[in-house]
Image (cartoon, rainbow, N blue to C red; front, top):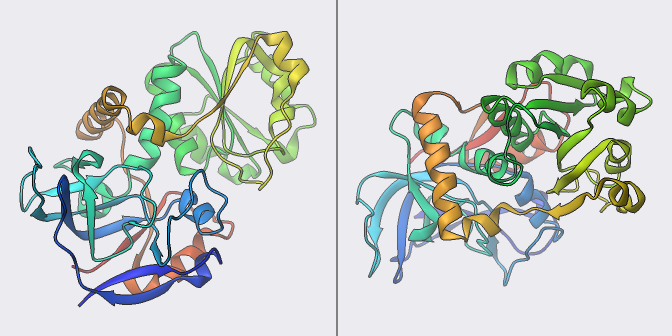
Length: 333
């Protein structure tokens, strides 16, 4: 029998249960993946507590929006998918059909072929972080040598991906961290400047100095209420705040006066809205796939757990870490 991790209520990861199930044939427009590996993401953590941008439509429900595996069945009407080849799932509104299992049935429009130079573990670790960063940094902010971009929480996987990508386009990438020991990691990831929030009294003043008085053209911010008012006085003219999470658990009060003065825009950002747009999705896939093949972007895996250790993996992710990168579950199939 195949195995799946499910949750029966919004009790968080400690409510996860490993159980057996019988894989179903894929329906019209679907494929079935024999999952080799799947990744943990903060969005899944929030979903298990019912504080994400969507909710489960029924219980029991699976967690997981990012996996890699071998196509072992193809549903009616699916074209262009190769049986026996490795594919990756793309992040999307999966509801209760998550990837935390030995097999997953998924709509074929939400998969892409795995880069040939990556292992199954690596292939399961790249799409969420790099696509999350790609759209605001490249398509919306238009990163270039003239742009000053603030990335808060730069050690997070999406934030770190934003530093990687922004550097490729020559932007002045500024990031924040709470701890001095993250400085070298962030510089090596693409940051031009690292602000250790525990060591500075006036973030906006520091940002103005770093940008020679210009201010920041964009902020890529998953933190929440505890950060936005610290940098908002340094918003440049026509700046955009791309807000994509609440790491501190509280939605921010918008700094309206600062935004008025800068003619700034607050953009609640979800990757799913771009994955569901066919043209934008293809742009994101092409960029991430090609940069991975060329070695310009690289997987960064922190730790690998077995299927049976899924709750242990969540325990590890939920605590402060000295190392950074994706945490992966290897199914063993």
